[in-house]
Image (tube, rainbow, N blue to C red; front, side, top):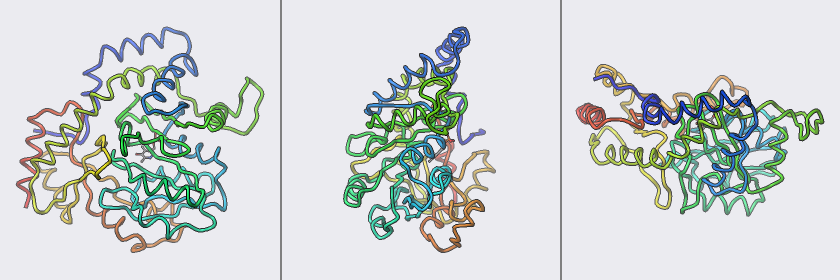
Length: 364
Ligand SMILES: *Cc1c(COP(=O)(O)O)cnc(C)c1O
């Protein structure tokens, strides 16, 4: 049996009729950028996460860098972020000229809140919290630190649509929550898309203006902005998917519950969820010192896997200029060598999952 690490076609097929009807409706409407679909999606998504405002953007990376831009964080400023994140989190900081300051992750793969305070300097302006692999970070101590030091709090929710910490949704703890709707995300579009959510009407308005060439009124430009508009087609398709997000998340939780119950191999460490937090299981990420052999073994059985992520940002060529060599973030680097995302997708059959479980349990 051939098993792919992810199957976006299964979700499409499940709601095919609704997606196709919406696509046709938008195509036939004669209106393709910044219209009713975008407005409705923004309202529905803001309501879903429990924020006052949502502004649709062209990608998750845009959500991050535009958030820091409107917060006025750039050259000379430091932003604290976990070392083991997807590189886009870091680019969201550095595109504006700010400097990332890396903190090691905890056992739940999110920023270790107990190691943040020692990294705060008089240049620190913000903490960027990434809810990695779908699990909400430990927000209570982080929110306390941002209050104590008067820092901005930005959340990278690209993997955590619907995940909560103490019943409050990720994206609503700080100044801005940044979302990606890249096709493989839990709330995925059929192309690139993103958004910010915020309770602050000024931030929402600034992002709204910035995404459209800095223009509030056509041909009157207040600032040098960007073209980062969410288009009508993606917004319409996202509305269809958002209406099903909770059932899709429940299915992922069920599948991951089965993994956690039935995977039994002393060479493999299973992911755990922090008390008070929930995970929407963007990935099911195991850790093993024998990771590379495990990948080969699973490949032989036609089971595909992905490493999220093999090269931590501080060791990537793009960030060589930070001058952080190997050994500067030992936990982050160990995770990069040990993590493995095993197959997980909506529509995964019991037969497929049992084949993955049996194969992993037989690995020696
Ligand atoms: C996907 C992702 C992003 C970037 O989103 P895009 O829409 O691809 O630009 C940022 N941060 C994290 C953690 C991600 O997983």
